[in-house]
Length: 318
Ligand SMILES: [Zn+2]
Image (cartoon, helix red, strand yellow):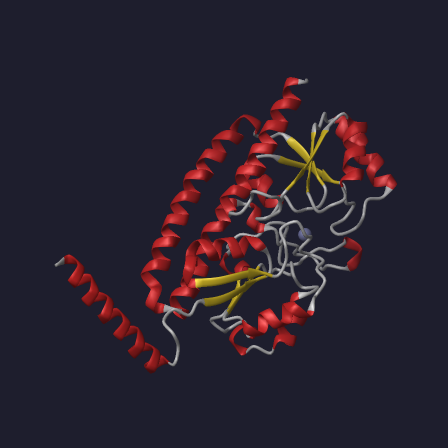
């Protein structure tokens, strides 16, 4: 009896799929094709869309997202996409706009298109906002604020909400599923955020040196302080005079930790750490920034875990 019923349901389901295919001209099984600029957004889109979406990131998590070679294959991918997800706030300004123009895809090109999602539009508070006029002598400074907001895990929530909202509009048939996956992601992330915050409590107020001003949001959330950068200015390579001054300041203030995205050259950071008696740890800063980091949560598990264990070790050696 049960078997017969499910067979009947199956027949009904096939009939419905056929009718909807005829009506919409599309298979109900077609996935939403999503292209993202960096892997963090691909990971979140996959978590929310699961098998209803086909997601590809243009760049890898171990690549510097400020500087990317615009390959022709990127244009092909954007041309076929239903949705583009990118960081915004000028992070991809050097390479993405030209690809969008080349792709000639009206579904994703205009900022007002449903398929055009600029993640920074979902973030309320930016850090390092420059009110004064900006010129090139200040380095690669973004007037609207520091674009590395995804390194505050709390910002994963509004971005996930934004992605879910777009998917619901683009594919209303699967709205309940997107909604549920979004809610599950947020509760899992919230739980982890409070765990990470507990792990970080003992280190509140500790000063760390970074390579690039990539960690502003992370440090702000983690309760750590920024003691300086190896880059004299954002996007400007280290200089001997700046490096010498940095070492002097680190010794004076007993700064024991240098962190840097693992795509920056580690040599200068290692030398500075050695001279100042500090520890240098290269860290993944995006999903897939290292093997085994496939989700946004796994990314922060790695970052928080490695920073707290390095700070524990430097404390022990004091
Ligand atoms: Zn940057």
